[in-house]
Amino acid sequence: MPDVRIRELTFDRLSLFTMLWAGQGLIQLLTYEYFPHDALFGLLLVATLVAIVLPNRTPALATMLVLNLAYSWAHLPYQVNHHLLEDCINLILLGALVIAWIRRRRGRDIGIRSATYEAFAGPARGALVVVYVWSGIAKANTDFFDPMVGCAATLLGTALHAEQNSAIVAWLATPAAAGTLVTEIGLGLLLAFRRTRFIAIPIGLLFHLSLAMVPIAAIQAFSYAAIATYALFLSPEVAAAAGDLIGNSLRRLRRHLIATVASGAAAVGVLVVAVTVASRALGSDDAFTYARVGLWFLGLVVLVVVYFRSMLAVVRREGPRAVAVSDPLFTGSPVLWAVTLLVLVNGSLPYLGFKTQTSFTMFSNLWTEDGRTNHWFISPAIQFGDYQGDLVTIIETDDPELAEIADAGHSLTRFEFERALSQKDDISVECSCYGQIRRIEKVDGEFTGYEPQFSYTPFLGRVMSFRTIPDGKVTCTQ
Image 1: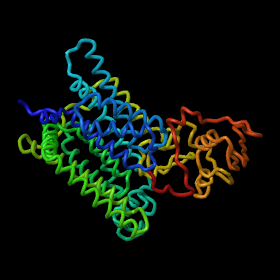
Image 2: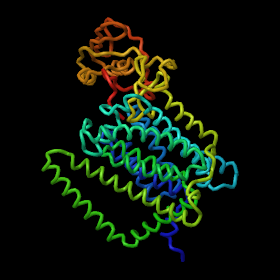
Image 3: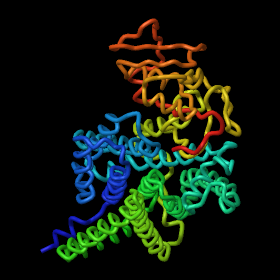
Image 4: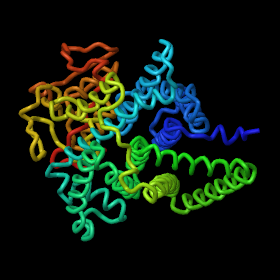
């Protein structure tokens, strides 16, 4: 009689991606402390865990995707760049499931899972390619290469536990900035063409592993998302080898389930005690932060090792080119490529005068506001959206959030200023805004002595957000 456990752990390509994708989704949920821990969060957490345990169950995958998209929509626009990439890939995958189901209902003799993967993989690969290219283009600016404020220098100093003005950071900052820009654009281009993917995959894995050494949650979370998506670029042979490797490991753990659970519980207990003692000794939560970052990094190392072991097994038999999928980039459902097109458009928005957050300019120091830019070759003359000019400077206010912006010496876009005015029933603010010094009062939801003509609307507020603007050079932000 066949072993049921072995049959349950057989991985097709969609199952392999589901396990890796749900795993990175779990990291996202557990990484960001500002995520609202509401009922929807709890449902999504459970659905994600179920998808990890049952990656070959299509209903479990569909449930996780629907809850993920619902959770993101409920909490827009406050997310980071790679969450938007995650949402787009979730939307593509859910659309592929729907397309496969419709084709099956119409009498076509197809397998739901194989048809889903064929419809989904190409547009999802394209989304990652687009994000790489836009992220690299955004870094082609003067401030990114400034060792005193540039993100390359900032992240390098964080990884080395050194001050940004230290000699070693100053020495390495420019090569790090140039290397990051070239690598990101290069990865996008190399992954786009099937003849060069076998080069891009190992470079990308090592690049993201090195990025994840920076003890910042957003950096590690993006590395998880990117490396999980790399499963779509692996050839069927490598994907099968990775599935076998993961499946064999899980079988061994299942055979010794009691010992595995006991060992895991003991390890967690020891870690919690050690971190608690260290935190009390330090008088801060730094120990908890570094323990979490260390565990995430360890998990990422394990995932990269699985990839490399699987690729090496295929390279020995068939050569290096056999590690990457040979499909052309533009495969899959044309309908789903519309989502990838939205990813492409989203990356262009800051240069066209629209939103500056979640536009794949992460850690780039890019400046496009107020009719000027620090970019090397994209001019503000191409802006036709009127959302980044007419900046507002807060002079005095009773609103804590606006006061915090004023205390930091930052201005904000008119759109974000009007968001604040719209969301408060009672607010008093004096500002340099709308071309003059103006005092605006709102009591019980009614403005006094002021007739607002807002560019902000609730729908636009869902899909657009803007960073605050410093008075001087652009410092490093997500």
